[in-house]
Length: 442
Image (cartoon, rainbow, N blue to C red; front, side, top):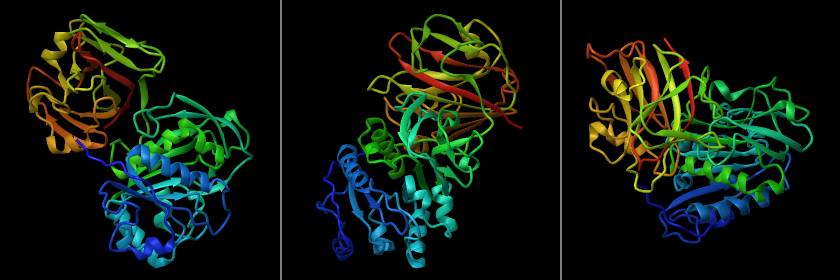
């Protein structure tokens, strides 16, 4: 369980920030909660929305239980000052804003596990600093006029996008980027280039992404040009989720993700079949929620040999005692107990004994509980599993952290050719799933 403390926010100038090096630059230096530094220096175009952005981040800090300090003085970029902060927000910075020594201090901060949040023109910053370009994920190239556009939400488990619908219609200044970050970062949302004019990225146009970068965490969103953006509840929630992930208050899988195809796209259960009692309810937002049981919703359209399966799941009850699981490697059958007898279950139930708890191969191998506990989000928040099968080896990642590595030696079972399914465990168990997708691997 994580502990944070609500604190007032503070906007500090250079004298306060640099003159109080023996204590946090805050109106409440005794507070030991999360701390975020907002940096908004500009050496190029200056956005009129910066004051609204700072005010919004202050308000989100109070709501999200982290303290916010703001400065435009690059002198804050020393090792001694930066170590006070869990993340640094580059709020529409432009041009060359840091000297080489300040750059080295920030690099050390990121390599030591610090967080970075880039908003809008943070991508129009430090073009000659290779480390920063990789951290931001892509550099600005151009933009058309401010106009409405449709945003496709690609990852609905990350806290920056988990509260959004699959499509998000909003107005902003939509950047084109010099390169596509998809191969090196995890894309959270992308633009539908057919929904507006002036796009130049050939139909694949990421607009928000995250990555684990050289020891630190980096989140970027291209939104935030207009002052009105910061009054939008959905955009504010987007920023808050990105900051919460960057400071380490919540977990998500931010590894690059390419080559997957959907098994369940949120609208149709074609190819799926219910075995045994109970059912799954499909909601308008594309979420499947278990009811009754004990049964199994299994993908009968195909069996799989070597693959990476990704899916999002969430416990509904506040106790965390809901029970479910993901079954792999079982033969086709309308008897759910066939999957129990001939396949393997990756468990969802954080309150059970080690070999029967979240991340375990049920009854066979416990998850690494220390890693699992650090990676696991609490009930009511989304988690992501990657289940990778190669030959008879089964590995499990929870929110990007590998928590299990198991090899089948049972001659009565085989992972080499089997079906996949999600369990509805019992009448009182409510576990939700969405965005099941798969990639064949070697």
